[in-house]
Amino acid sequence: MNNFTYYAPTKIVFGKGTESQAGSLVATQSCKKVLIHYGSGSVKKTGLLDRVKKSLDEAGVSFVELGGVVPNPRLSLVREGIALCKKEGVDFILAVGGGSVIDSAKAIGYGATNDFDVWDIFEKKASPKNCLPIGVVLTIAASGSEMSNSAVITNEDGWKKRGSNFDICRPKFAIMNPELTMTLPEYQTMCGSTDILMHTMERYFTSQGNMQITDGIAESLMRTVIENTRILIKKPNDYDARAEIMWAGSLSHNDLTGLGNGGNDFASHRLEHELSGMFDVAHGAGLAAIWGTWARYVYKDCLHRFKKFALNVWGVENCGTDEEIALKGIEAMENFYREIKMPTNLRELGVSPTDEQITELAKKCAIATGGKLGSAKVLYEEDMRKIFEGAR
Image (cartoon, rainbow, N blue to C red; front, side):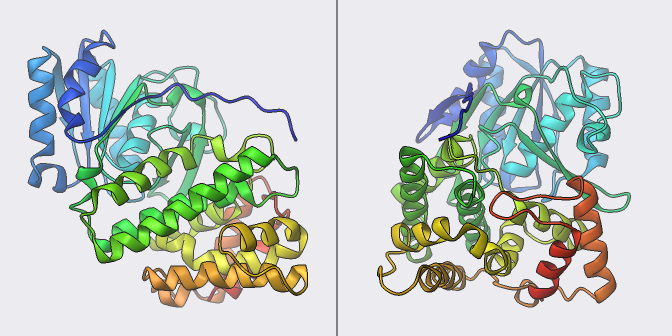
């Protein structure tokens, strides 16, 4: 077991109708003006935005608005938000949406309070000393950004998708009403479940240590997401299944599922960042498309963990060699992706990168990660290229 520090300061308000508490929760932050940050038309069409604004009005909280966040959130809108915050004297950001909105809010929070260009944070050229406080009204169970220290932004100049991790951006509170996820298309729900599973697996597959209780939490979380995702395929308005997945999304990415085991692989995520940066694909679908190839590329270096995964998550029979068992677990994961209509290769994802694009993807990933990444197996640029190539 490795040493660890665990920090999870976000207050969670969970359940039906909890968005009505947005105003009172913001008011406890003693702020003068709030930026309501959101995505496209869904929060307006469902009436959620109006309910949130009413709650703020009733609490006597003044606000300005900035919508327009898209999947793989753009740096240009972040810059617009920074300028708006400075002009209006904003001192709190309320993100109403999913991971893209929350990540955009975090980046705005950085840019509004530090005296250097916000993109320098994502290029690892600078570290933020401050961030505007952030609250969340969550509408999608997926990224876990409502409790995490991470944010991912896409720069349209070169279509570079980069992430950052700083505890000062962790939201002060997150309102989580599973009912708000019922309007999502099936594809988005399935992408979300995939992202939740991947956040857990990125910490689970490690060659650096073991911790029984952490592994048990991670395995239980994965089984829970798999079971309840299957329910949602048949009954998309099942509240309990929505609730299980929403809470799993937060626990999967608040560091709980990697404590003590040294698990911080995130190779699949970093590879996918380049895919969605270049081709603007849905993040969860991109992860599913790359995972099987990554798993078969690294499993021999992390065989004991892949065997545990097969036995404890998928119930594979404990017979045969460790390698045979591990491969059955990988196959079971891919079969589940197919069951929920997620791609298992780039062709099924709808992209066909050329040899030149494969080389560019690997080069960008290597640059973004300082030349290497991975905990299950350390990957270098040539390894990254082979995984992209094998996933075609």
